[in-house]
Image (cartoon, rainbow, N blue to C red; front, side, top):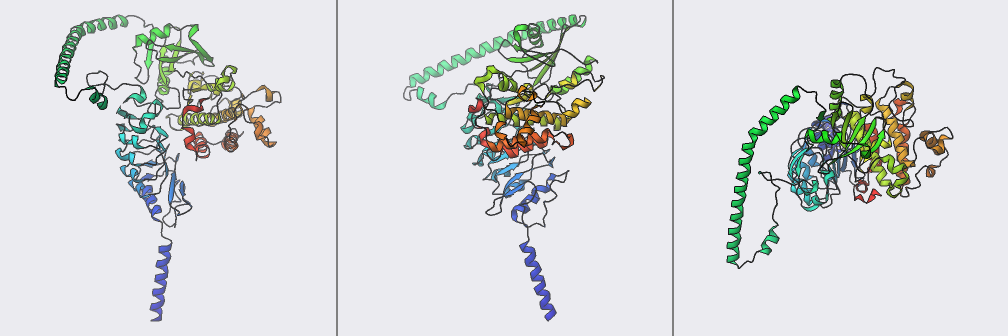
Amino acid sequence: MKMGALALVFLATTLLSEISLALSPDGVALLEVKTSLNDSKNFLSNWRDSDESPCLWTGISCSPKDQRVISINLPYMQLGGTISPSICKLSRLQRLALHQNSLHGYIPNEIAKCSELRALYLRSNYLQGGIPSNIGNLSLLNILDLSSNTLKGAIPSSLGRLTRLSHLNLSTNFLSGEIPDVGVLSKFGNKSFIGNLDLCGQQVEKPCRTSLGFPAVLPHAASDEASVPKHSSHYMKGLIIGAMCALSFAFIMLFGFLWIWLLSKKERAVKRYTEVKKQVHQEPRAKLITFHGDLPYTSCELVEKIESLDEEDIVGAGGFGTVYRMVMNDCGTFAVKKIDRTREGSDQVFERELEILGSIKHINLVNLRGYCRLPTAKLLIYDYLAMGSLDYFLHDYMAEDRKLNWIARLRIAIGSARGLAYLHHDCCPKIVHRDIKSSNILLDENLEPHVSDFGLAKLLVDEDAHVTTVVAGTFGYLAPEYLQSGRATEKSDVYSFGVLLLELVTGKRPTDPSFVKRGLNVVGWMNTLLRENRLEDVVDKRCRDAEVDTVEVIVEIAARCTDANPDERPSMQQVLQFLEQEVMSPCLSEFYESHSDKS
């Protein structure tokens, strides 16, 4: 009997021990989420069911009060799979960051049950389907970033109910239809929706059209009702008769246009055939290739404008050629780069590699629209960014009225890092820029950065030349090993980006005379001041709102990027992660409030 009693006591003790060590409900939910993910790199290996709490797991943060999960932060983890509906079981979740992975499938409708969610980052995955229609239930949502996926369908009007939403990015998807002009949605402009060719509405300044192709003009019910006397039957009859007459006239006009169009269609076809036949036997004066198919101009219009460019249209010149501003008849504006040198090889190879560059699309990269080959020149057509380059804002004395404050500089750093990380990690084949510098960071009207000239260094340099003598890039930005070997890698781009960060902090060129006289570049000068504990002397005196904490972070990241040993430098993916976690958090809203930080 004593043995039986001891066995019962031992069993009860064991059960109590197992119960006390049982994983919390939030931990169980996270393990369910994990089962739908493909963790190929085993980053989530410490998500174990033997733990009592998930609060020490990779990417998980908990509330110190009740140990409930409040944040899932797993960007750049190369995670595949899908987002599990079990995410809704985390009722205290405030931040969900799964951006820059390889997730596919649908955004689960159950995510709307995470009623305390404040930030949702799902950009740069392969998510499909539509945006959940009940997403408007997330009443506390402050940030929503679903950009660079393959989402389709309409934008749900329930988004308009998110009164606290300060940052919205739905760009670079396949969304379609009219953008609802309701609630908070009315305050977001083109930047939030760019890259969805089938979207229309006031926010993108693109009128929606009816099935007949005419702009749709919707009446405002309140004003229409107010304009009609309620007790005037004669007025109503006259209005109806007038409307019927107008409708009949419209049908007659439409029928007439159709009849004329049908009669001339055959003539146009004959004429077109004759023109094509003539061109077969003639050397074409120009060859034009467009890459995105969304330029609303004919080849003849574009070639005619390109051929008419002269010295008055020049807006800049760089290592690869002269840049012109080309204004179309409808005021559409483009930048045309006339390249001065090309590597040896066939035009077919050159054009095929250009098509790779033309297929790349990212909100922080300058859009390459097309290529034109004239008998005397080769030209690249880009989107035109009227605000010019970062170099102009930082160093041109004429730009004194356009000083960049600290928040604007941080936004430029983070946006440039996103563009460069996209080239290194998301393009196939990956692209090494080779010439990262402030003059290749162009700014739009909202001071959002766009990396330009990516891929041109490799495309326009003779690959058969000796690598030790062919270095594409700008002195001061070049990594030591690149100068020695002539071989560019992702890590040499990282070095150049580190120099760019120092340029943003100091407001000085990499080879500023003030420290070149001492035999230093900006990296050596920075290291000297840090050893002397003179961080306050580093910051650009024109940037009076710089915060010491974030300055220290930026300088630390720049120091890691410019390490003399390329193996010790982080990848651009890691650099972007550092910037987003250390600089943007926890005061994300400062980066996206108004555009008052342009000055």
